[in-house]
Length: 255
Ligand code: OOG
Ligand code: MG
Image (cartoon, rainbow, N blue to C red; front, side, top):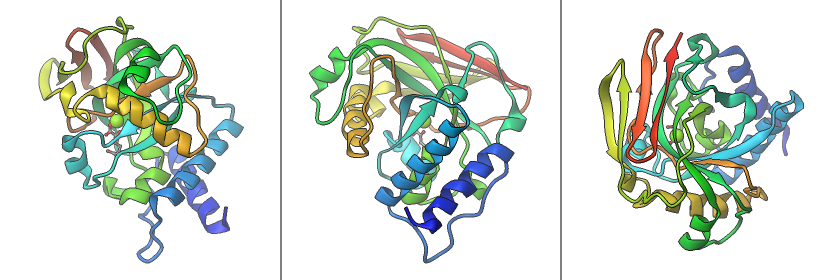
């Protein structure tokens, strides 16, 4: 990889470590999605060198609501590491982030390896459990503004996540009500059908898109399907809860 790309990965990594936004990539030096994935992979190597372990992937921009919120209309993915996981029912420290937002997600926990072109049926068979989740996104770019290649380079804005209790893998997830509440009041409401028409399609896309980068989904991996609603900016003191019909709830407080 060129020095320029390495330095973008290092700049984004510093933004994570210091919880300080970094400027958008300068006009004229925008990067395309494949280049963004190369930068993302390098950023993950930097995290692994600090002892972090990849434990799954997140899909991004799998619903209209999300695409419209950020103005990018292609599905993306990023890696989840063990350091990004937070304890369900616990806290999220506001100062660890730049401008964090929370969004409700359906999570898949895999029981089998899944990679390349797979059918919906094959994807369903690879699911060992489902769970409600909240992803914390925190674009490392100023004002949460980016184009496709930039957000891909930035690990698709992923910063942390909470996973709720496991639910049975044969739960019908085609059209589940999803509510994100702040301090007990519903703030964002959606349906799992908003996720590519069916959240399982996000898992199919995860197998295909990650394989293109030489990444394989392994047993035990967590796959976040992408949010069905817009994300909510977080402030200290907020109690955040996501409820997904038939799957259950997951919550935390911002301190
Ligand atoms: C990009 C990440 C999108 C989702 O669930 O759609 C994403 C962003 O919104 O910053 O995680
Ligand atoms: Mg997300």
